[in-house]
Image (cartoon, rainbow, N blue to C red; front, side, top):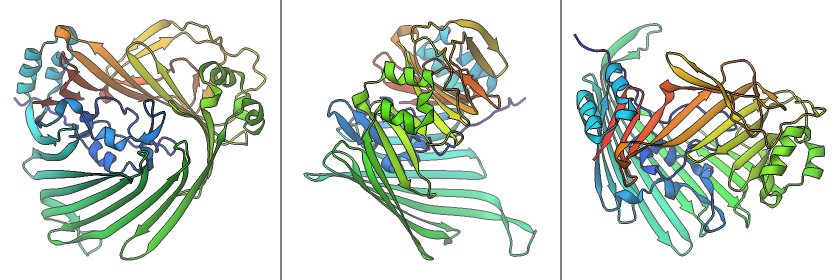
Amino acid sequence: MLRPLILMFILFSGKLTAQEASHPSIWYDQFTARDHFTSQLLNIMATRDYGVIWDSLSDQYISAMPKRLTYLPFANQTIEVKMTEVDYRDEYQLQKWELFSPERMDSIFQLGKQVGEVTLKYDELGRLISSDEKLKPKSTYKSRREFIIHYLESDSGSVINMELWSREFYWFARYQSSYAGNFMYRPLRKRSVWKSYNQFDKNGLMSKHISTSASKLNQREGSLPGNYIYDFTWDEKGRLLSENYESVNEEKTKVIAQSSKTRDFSMERDSVLFPLLQVPSIALWINNNFDKKDLNLIEYTGGFKGKSGTFLEHKQHDKLLYLDTNVTPRQVLYQTLIDSNSIYRAVFQIVGHPSVLDTTPYDPDYKSHVIDTRYTQCSIETINSRPPGLIDATKADGFKRSILPLNGGWSMALYQRGASDYPSTRFSVGYPPFIRLDVLNDEYLILDSEGVIRYVGSHQKLAKVN
């Protein structure tokens, strides 16, 4: 009897809210190769100004795109990746990590059904120059995606050109005919090309991004060719000053401009303007954890939807707060917690206003402790003791990355995400949020004794890197 198989193709996926959209890859870290053979490579092509990270070596902001396309352990190599689907019983055996060994991983990998393969090529600097991905989960569907990347360097800056050639074939794909309400079936062949031109200034910040695309269905034009142009300007500290967006196709041209103004942060002055800063626990969180000279207020005007907003940002922790001068509109708090082996990031949406009369904000020396652990079929939820100074949020999203030891000097990088289950969530600034991390969303990397990626897995999906 055939065992049931469930396939999940996209690692690190999911729609992002408007305030998170500037960080589509919330887990930018040293394991960049995990993005080179998944759909995240598409996100890298479209990062635009998102990819601004703080570089402590140069003490300024730089673009993340070049770093995300580089994985030094694979320099001057051609890497073969095989992808399989694993049934739930084999996955259960796989996740007995206390029994881990490379041989055991290989044996479970061999039990899976191969559903795709990727060939990655890297130059002498460890930069990805091509990714050829073939997916064939069913005999009625085949897909191939070929990424080609070129790097150009000059005294004035650098350029990264990326091309994606996609070919898909469906046997008896459904389509709607010209007769309303009638559906017919026929073979469908789709071919598309997407090109991304990215120009960087001498400080490593993106100054221009051009995206073009076109596709054909059964040798006929399947969509209008698109041409999108973004221009960026930055101040002397590498902070965004303006963003101009132009969309051109066969029908019309659309131009949108966004500008920003950055100034130093002052708690005394800005707490008068923004009521959220008057909440005692939030004020203590800012005063106790961040050097004021590293904090900036960035005011955006214009934008893609005609909206404006003000962010409190820290140079190494990105956004901290999305603020409003009124009390009731939606505001956002971004929190990053770091311990010896994990990073926990949470995003809280606050509608309404916490009490500024709260005279019992949380104690900065309070030591949270686990009081209960709840197990369900799909999740493990840890309940921590709650300090005073709780704030109500209408929604909370959590993202956690942990580095866990395995036998033989190997290790695992575990990525987890989840969201609050209730209409409102109470949280304490500076402490782990009460968010259920759904095990069905877990993704993990298996690293050998030298810290090189050898396996990538998610729910009933396992890929082996050779």
